[in-house]
Length: 454
Ligand SMILES: Cc1cc2nc3c(=O)[nH]c(=O)nc-3n(C[C@H](O)[C@H](O)[C@H](O)COP(=O)(O)OP(=O)(O)OC[C@H]3O[C@@H](n4cnc5c(N)ncnc54)[C@H](O)[C@@H]3O)c2cc1C
Image 1 (spheres, rainbow, N blue to C red):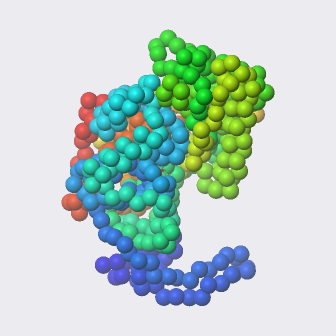
Image 2: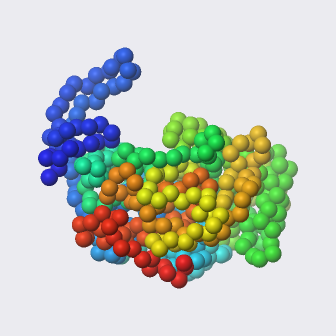
Image 3: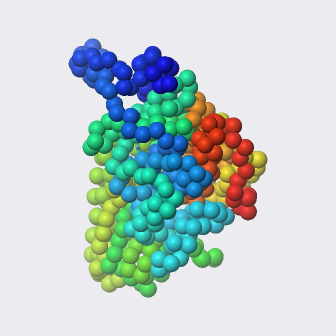
């Protein structure tokens, strides 16, 4: 089948030449274009399956589990050596917009309840890694870690093949339906989908943040400084108190609303850094941002320790493997969620979940302030329609998590993990049904199983 059709790999048209049949040509430097021509190679096709999920963060893990539970054969391909995305690689230990979500989100909250964590909305990074693997094992998902998606091949407008790289080299994989849950929309971009990036005026994206795990302080001493979800308690006050302490010790905060989350009595996570104007598609910029951020976090912890008293034993346990990328590509889908949908509180027949979180835009320009932007309009709870999870430009491809189709302001609201899990769960169900019935995702009649939350 593959070798008779037109096959397009990462934007390069190779008519009637599938990966396995490509001829070879000589490697060489083209001085005029300053490009290096790599010779065409045969890449082993490792597996053909029903559904491949790319990226194992909150959205991808939920998508894989739900597709497998719906009867599909599922592979989950992840860059890191564990699942969880921003929860684990990013040390972001706080669920938002989870209360009205059923299904897998509730199952995750139950895990937290039994793990001895201070509040069920917080998560322990290591326990989360274990539980996500347990969910995958029980549902029959086949995970593949340490692997990056680097290429995509379409036939007659449908994504049929992806290419991965790891220490086994380059490999090709086929599926009936793919789900892009890479956060940054890597797969959809490689497949040739259109996308938007950044603010409509100027294209700036939200700042990145390197998070950290902290020990050597105690819950009983942190009342004034830690984030607590109790009605009547101020959101800003503990952050302002913590900022004052860091400054008293002689350090600064590039995020002037630093957040300290108590996971256990003596174990905390910290978000106190902003890296401004860093492109999420430029790895050199991300590298420098990570280095700057790590230095800043070390200085902040040293500053607090220098104060003595309740801070005298504070230690940085770890900085995140992956600097937290709030915002990257928003892939064009069959529907694009807009600011107007937030203002009107839009409802859709194909809703996958209802977003209740507001529009959370961290400062785009540090010369103005280093906190949270005032957005100038009021949003209401709104639905995320399944169509915004189905790619517009390429068939056989769905998105879940922060790379779905929405505008800058909508993304700033639905991007949090309660919604990412619910989107993943819905995408997994639809992808499985489409693969099993040999249909495209847009041809599946969808009704949310989380009707209670709508
Ligand atoms: C600093 C920060 C603080 C935040 N605070 C909160 C909060 O308090 N509460 C909340 O609910 N949300 C918060 N968010 C938002 C939320 O964490 C993300 O929007 C959410 O994780 C999106 O989930 P996702 O699965 O789409 O993406 P991600 O969590 O980014 O997961 C993507 C996964 O894909 C993998 N991947 C990426 N590219 C490739 C590739 N090419 N090949 C293979 N694998 C790949 C990554 O390793 C990762 O595991 C925060 C985000 C940031 C950055």
